[in-house]
Length: 427
Picture 1 (spheres, rainbow, N blue to C red):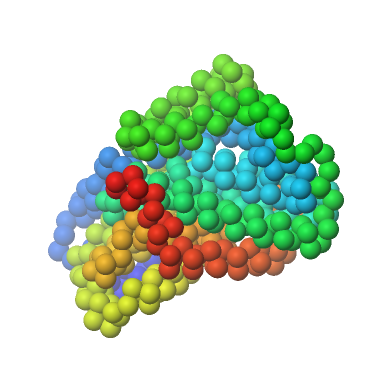
Picture 2: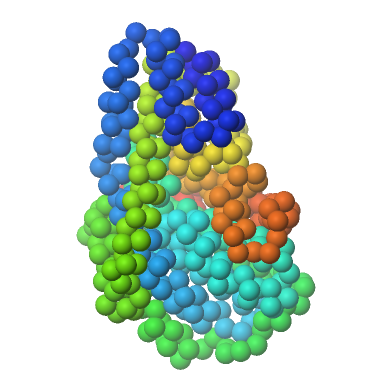
């Protein structure tokens, strides 16, 4: 059964069939030819895959992200980030990365962050002597930090797949995201000083300017305060925080910023519904695929085999990184998490790896997958507004992939970065 399952999935993906259809048909064909189960159980398993409390947060975060993207919050976040940077060398690149970190805490979507921040900052980067390659690489890679900084859709998928607390994952992702973004900030400053960019003029960072921009963007900055503050204090669950932040964002863009009307809201609802439907189908069919694998006893046999030949957490974490890095190059982050996590989760637990730390490592790999050739989604989002063919974008992203790999090693082998805040909060 397992041979048929894997071969069918590979063939369908190579043919360009959508992932959720490939997962469904490979599972269905394997059940039909190699099991005695009634095929009606496939529908039950698909429904069971989405009938989980943790997944309730996902539609709210996706809807909130669309509202914030269309409602003018991105420009205000950019101005706020710029006020913090001031006029130091590299301020445009630093503002780009910092704004991506802030916007990631609003929407939790990497492609949305690239679209919202990149379209504003790409012309600025070119005008200030950064060069097309660096500008494109920074734009495509900076948005990936959104997967680590809460609220992260990928953390929700991991939590729903493994049963790990979404709240603890969000808190762990905050520390990991700061380290991830901080290293990009350091590299951007080094590059700007090296090439001599022309962006060290203008208003200096001063308290008055920061206060002014904070006042203008305070309503946008309220979203992460609601999400993280509510979760940290225990006032909200992640799901409740998602619902409250959605209502809050809608009220802000409609009545305070006044950039949302009924027609735009209708378009936002349509776009969000399409995205949510795709993710739900992906979750459901991935659950079916995982169940078919489990009845073939592959995860159980693989667990026993891995534990018998590998007795080092370090070696096992390296294997996990290799698997998810390769997976991230070719398939969607959510699909990669749902397909491979059930296989490696039990061996990881038997080796004593913390499930929250494991989640951070997996999601950090998915961050790199978002801008890794050949199918990194951020690359194609960036190609819609940069002046380079996709093959040149592949070349431009190489330094940022190397930087991200170094960051991944730090997050993998220094678990205290991820676990410090969750332990402090009592998770």
